Length: 590
Image (cartoon, rainbow, N blue to C red):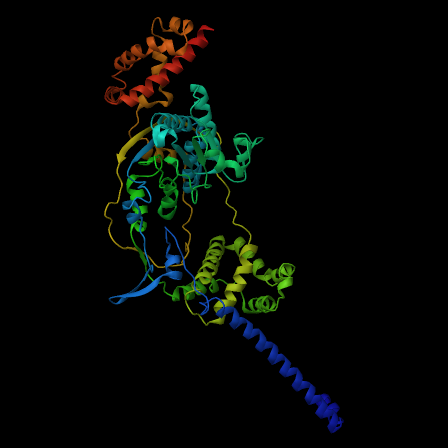
């Protein structure tokens, strides 16, 4: 320091003045630059709020809470404030005035009962994640060929005997499946059943996005265009013709699809809330020859679907969101030492000074400011994966919540904006969580299966229940994750059997093999099978089969009662047994 002052002392007064002038200019430039950065940040914050010179209007049949928060009118009701649409033309009023049809008026629910068995005793005692195993087993049952074959038969026969007659003989149906693979398998099962029966009055299309690889045949890939025989863009127009009657879908065409000839929907996917209303509303379009609609549901209960429709039947109102929810999320994000202020400031400065023409080219430059945070996250995953995932969930919730609330709440906190800008760049750079799938391989088999109706319902909401309140936007995310629970595979199978197989007995053994075996032993049936086609064979078989069921009543009391009381069940069981017995006897006689 002494040397520095000595060197400065030998300067002339003019040189000192010049030095001070330069130093002052540097300080002023730095302050101006800092001011520009702060101004840009303030502008970024203000740009998210409402603009005095712009008006926005929302028109929707299924308002979500976000819609009410952004566009609703705030009203005081007692000591509370609610959000209300500025005008409502309700679903109830539209139904009463004949502009749409009531899709809940004719609703039939089905249930699938099944039993599973472990096929490898050694593996049965292995402990597996309960949640993953339960999901894998349910998926195994839903994709099982016997399950799809039963449902394909129900769908095709119901369509031919009921839906095909609707809308002056032009009625169409939609099959809603739970995944793209399910859509592929359903299309194949429906086509196979139609072909086996020789039907020419029912033809199906399938709709799904992208490419599907069947895990049971990975060498084969499926696309919508390949399975239908024409391009995706042509589907709506082709389905509008009399050439096709059934459309199998996976997400596609569940919203926004306007086809008045749609009369029936076969649902094999869990639906709730907004998704349920939007999906079933594909049926509500009016047509001069359309008097009603019909839903056959394999996956949801009547009560669940009615609850989904209630909020959207009359007027939906909402609770205003507490602005403090954002600060709670900010605290959650900052409680994990991954994001630090110096990284945030560096990225925000670079982002706000980025010329518009360089936005795409500058991604790598922006990413560089998140490298340290990403490295800290990866290190935390190795040490404490649960805390790392809590951080990811909190940051995701924060970014989503801020993007929404900043449009309706006049935040002036620049720290909130900076964390949002940084989090938006960091999130997609965090490595995806590795979720190893559970492959059961050949460890389980389906031993019993029955799909039957559980009720015919009129779920119409009638006069409704007045205003329905939607809760405020919480933005809390999922919070701490529960620790994965493990159990032996055979224990999980037993629990599923208790839940889904309680009404099953040995009489429900898959495909009723014991009845068919008994039928093939009846005298004269083999000769009749070898000498006739299946139709004529049925003239002999059908009468004898009723006797077989009655003779076996000790082992099949439940089936006997249903066979005698339920004509549809008796017809279906007899038809299946006839086909199977005919096939076996012909093979034996060949």
